Length: 638
Ligand code: ZN
Image 1 (cartoon, rainbow, N blue to C red):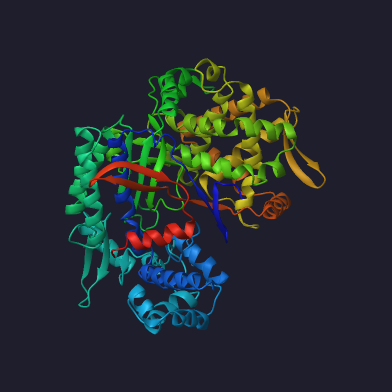
Image 2 (tube, rainbow, N blue to C red):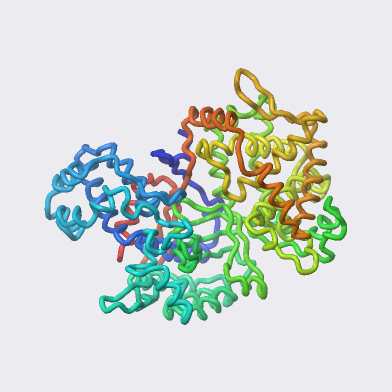
């Protein structure tokens, strides 16, 4: 196992990430990161409880048995795998598919394991007897149909009643919709439930309300962070967040969000609060999450270079002149190192985040984009020994080039995609992306990807010094085509279509391009010993094709040409070649690489001298189970 891989179980791989430059920071910045990190960890139980009403009880039971068996050298493999899956998902639902896990042990086994633990030990750890715990959990654990999905999106059903997520209790979708037809101010941060007399109420997540004990801790650490903030503006931002946690009012959250967006340029930043609504079938309630961020100064300077040239890129974009923006501003993006991940961002984490989510704030005040460079770096390190590249690349030269430039080119692609791609181009009068309906997001992602692909091979990259040579771009072309035509199918069940917009866009681009590249001898899919590979022989020709497709995709978006969008996405982006799909799945499975990854956090420890913090030490040697058990010991209040 490579040193970056900490653990492997089921379909999961746990990695570690490092924070370059932490040791050299001034003490004040280290303290700020430490306090924000404590605030990030204290929200853990909120997210567990949001995921499932019995999630915390289940965790206590599993951890109690796990530790007892571990201590006695009798740790069952079935218990280990299940416990780790539950830890990783912050509950009993898969973090990606939202499906409930089925234990690979029986009810009798579980009861036996529980009663093996001395009664007093079990009672003090779990708060109930084994029988009481089993009574509460057995339907959830052993009835596969009971609360089978965390988030149900099947139209025609009561989405609230069929989703296990704990934002609603005892109410129907209709009752929730009625409630928000009249009120709605705490829709983002409350649980809606029905009292015994039938009235529907909101339990607001705030100090003195629901989750108060955890929120009190978060506030405590945020206040300490405010005291050592970089400047008065940042201290003010943190205090506004505290105010929101105290009141629970959306107006306070908006006030915080506005100042948070405006506050730019400091080395340390953070995300902390009830942010994303993907886990709510109605899209109202937000899960709790946190990321503590340290700016990567060097990489952020590169972004500035790209952003500063935004108009040049727009003027040279291979699209019809009428769709070029006359005045374009590059979006600023910060390249950061994650220092601590919490709540919905841990252990599975995004590699890029753009906030706030409130559209009206984005329009008036803009947004902040971050890319998590140390997370991307860890993915690349873990990928090196995985065998995926060796399996799917055609030649040793392709492999060598990918190993040399892959990480750098990938990062550059993200920057071009986010900072310029999405913001480029203009629409015809009266047209919006909504004209393309369900195909809008695939077309939009394709536009941003094509922008990145086209310009990555431009001399401008060397001129502004963000890529040493064309080889870097060609390595990226190999990787992109390999992924879009082959490797990404490993994540799709056989017999299923591609549904996710980024994956659709990738296959759409690659299939459209290869169809035109083959007749002119620029690229082809070749077979060798029963395995298929993508071979590119004329990279410049491929670049021209990327440019042509960009022009067409921009036209589709600008004119709102729904028919063309549907045709393009359905023809190239949705269905897979069945035989090739089967082959890719087989080749990928043989490598034994789990399809999903997540992370353990570094450990931050204050070094005390005479009652004062003299330094903050960072270390990276915690194992996955160690970290989970420590978090449960240190950060449980609910
Ligand atoms: Zn995008």
